[in-house]
Length: 399
Picture 1: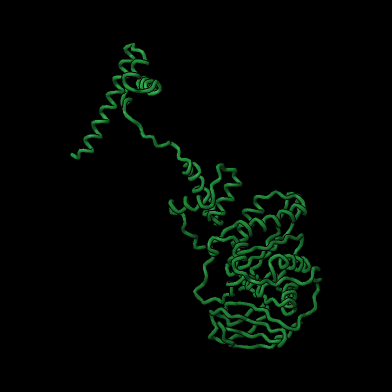
Picture 2: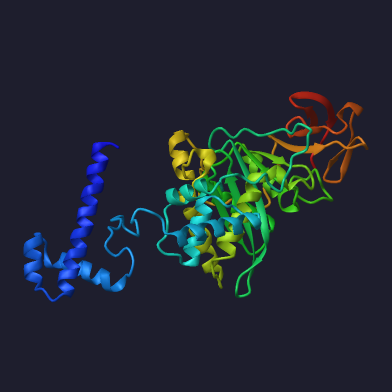
């Protein structure tokens, strides 16, 4: 056996024998002063082993680990379990379940001490809870045209949520907009979804986010216009074309094509409408703006390399374009004379292109393909594209 190991065992045995002898002498009635003096030990040392002898019948004389029972730098087990439970709950409810969403949920639950985002990420990592949901929305196998999202304000996605209700009760609609490059959001709430309210909402959001190159929306009447007059150009189309924005309308009944705003709407419902108590229109206005600021300044996205939307915008050093006038344009705007807007459609077996009820025949080779129908206002033409190749053209005079 190694000499060092033998020496260590010997010294350990000697220390234990010393403890046993000290306690025996104390129990035999010897004065503590003489015991401590002969062993070169303190009174606290003697009393410690006497107390251990009284409390424990076995192994009282053996040394214990000096490692603290609680490590200040380690997350308490209860907090770790709560993080795992919250993450599972969010995941099962098909909601955001990343570290930021979990942190907000812990704040709402009043959990203390509140772990940092870094701590939550470490908990998720060591418990193998970093896998992402594949999503409720599964794209079809047919190639789908995608808008650019490399730079701020290249593309905005927008949606109208509602009707929603306050405690009042007051009914309202929420216009939500997300910049696909930086994840910045812009929110506006209104009591109705009339044409002027839609224009008010986009104008207010553009004054904060900037004017985009493209805006992608669904086919709601509030965005496209009246289905009885599909060529009439609704308020949003007119507003966009007057200010150099190209609207894009996703396929009918395919909300997943606006996936980023759909995901944001879940967050909006979960963290704003479901959490903030509002009874008046003033409460709604204040709360909406506060949530927008909170999201843009504190929510971190993996697609942004962990940056917040505001940090991502600053890092891009992009120059944004804002409305030049303070006043909101008034409905009804004059019919634009230039500009383009686009309608994306899946051509089915009937070989018909459906533009809000108006049907156009298309060539057989377009069956089960996604096509882009581009309305050129200046030329009064509807041009049909497969990928970037024009395959058909129709006269399309606006009403």
